[in-house]
Amino acid sequence: MNTRFLETFVVLAQLRSFRATARALHATPAAISLRIKTLEEELQTELIDRQSKEFRLTANAEYLLGHAKAVVDATRRLQAAAHKDSAVRGRLRLGVIESVVHSWLAQYIRELNVLYPEMEVDLTVDMSNLLERRLRASELDLVIQVEGVESKEIVSQALAAYPLHWIARNGLVDPRKEGLHQRLLQLPILTFGRGTAPQRAVEEILGKMANLAMVPLEQTRITCSPSVAAIVQLVKDGYGVAAIPSLFVASQLDSGEFVKLPVQPEPPSIIVSMCWHSNAEMLVHAAANAARQACARYCAQVDPRYIKSLG
Picture 1 (cartoon, helix red, strand yellow):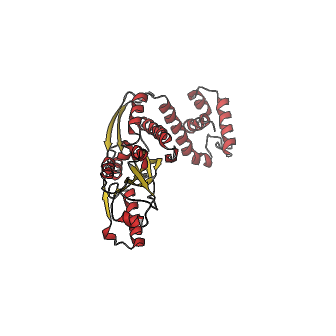
Picture 2 (picture 1 turned 30 degrees about the horizontal axis):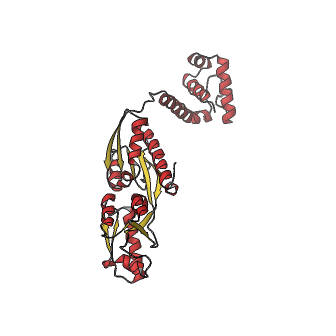
Picture 3 (picture 1 turned 90 degrees about the vertical axis):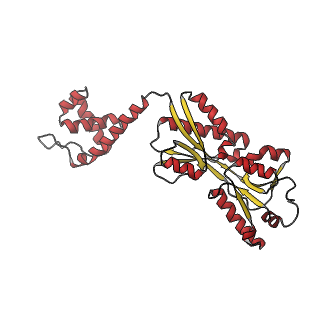
């Protein structure tokens, strides 16, 4: 549908004269009449009551007028936005979880600096629930966290899935011996901060393991930490077994310092998502697009199976 014809209809309804509308739109009355007839054919309804001696809209035209105005206004806003200064500049208040810090954050920040040299980034690293709270309060512009945000005012988009594995220092647990589950339950289990999706999943899995192994649940120990670096160090020290993404310890796994334990079930993958307000400025949309590309490139380099969605 030609929005110029809708604009003609709106102006005609306001001026109530083909001649006046022609003057306002720098056209001829015949051209205005042709536009209205074409619009009537497209809408399959009459807009002008041609049986009346005075200018009069039909009932359908009165009903459709509000919708036509909305389309015309939206078109004008779109045109205005398209002709805005395209330079991305300003301050981006970015919040990320530590998992991103230990994977593709550095690459992302470098790309932002190259793509948008006039963008200033204020970085916050925190737990997902705290980042979400600050996003809802409009204290952050773009958040990269675990899982999305359920809100009509916030856009959430999945970026990647980080598979979790049971990781231990080589020699801490012999995976070849029987009773692996019982021996696992005797050790502290390291996972992410309390209240996070990974922590809740690990707690549920350990509860089922304890029940099947007839181990009292109170004898199991879960050590929670929002710091990936702290968890990795505790594994290195032989403190316990961690339920974390293997990509965080790829070098230790390659060197043989760490091993994956063949314990089933493994915790569900961490779904890394980015979230922003639906009415965000172009600055935020540009940063979100760059995040999508940086995450995809990182995942493709490490393991394409980590890629969940490129939206």
